[in-house]
Length: 334
Ligand code: GLY
Image 1 (cartoon, rainbow, N blue to C red):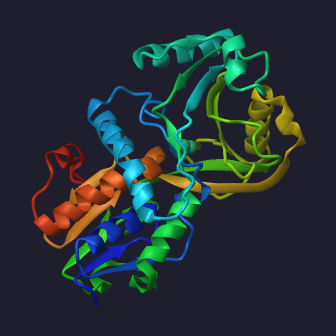
Image 2: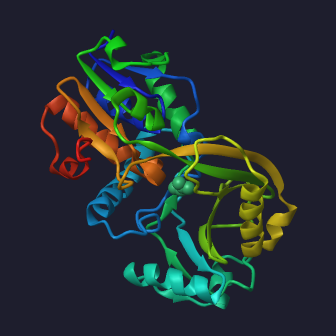
């Protein structure tokens, strides 16, 4: 067995392992074989848009990771769909405008009227009342990122379903097992269900990520260069994996209200996953005991937070000293 074992072959575990290997460490990743939340995730890198709360410690973590993403994507050395065109925040009804305007004002984004919005995004419905463009909110394709990380790590990844940490023979164990972290450590990580759709049509219909309030419902549309449009997501405090008529209906209705031409796209995938939530929905990052380090509970921001998590946890494992930033996210804070 290796000196260091990472339990969890999702985007967080693989990113940590990659950073450790780059620093010369002897690392094995134990991958339980299930597709993690990354497989469902759209890959929005949204340091502002996903932080509806004003938790400054979390916003600092988001911003640091967003800054790391361009270098992280470039170092992977293959196309991972990193795109910095930006995100258009949108509001359909007067109530949606009231709700979203607070966020845009806090982010000091200039407000855009319908004609300005349609100059940026010609396929938008004329019913959209107000919006704002954030150049800082970007996207990446999580499936391509995981494929690139797997390729980098190669035979260091072993298929193995860990049921208890005592069975892991290593000097240091990093638990990055998403929702599975609860059963392995007893930490309060809960599954928060999300249903996500994938549509496909002619490339170029949309240029920006769209992050919208539509009749009180939050929806995002993430267009890929190849014509795929990811539509997400429900947020349900449920553990089941059902793709429901109501979930699909709500997502499609909101997507078509925003961009009517999507009605002609093919519906290619309906997926469901579970975000790893915590009592304060901030991640658990740090030492649990002398042997075990945790990196889990990234809730809605696992893709965004992968680079900073990898950097901080690799530093903790190899240097022994915790970056001050980790102080806010101790896994023992509850
Ligand atoms: N980050 C988007 C989501 O969790 O749905």
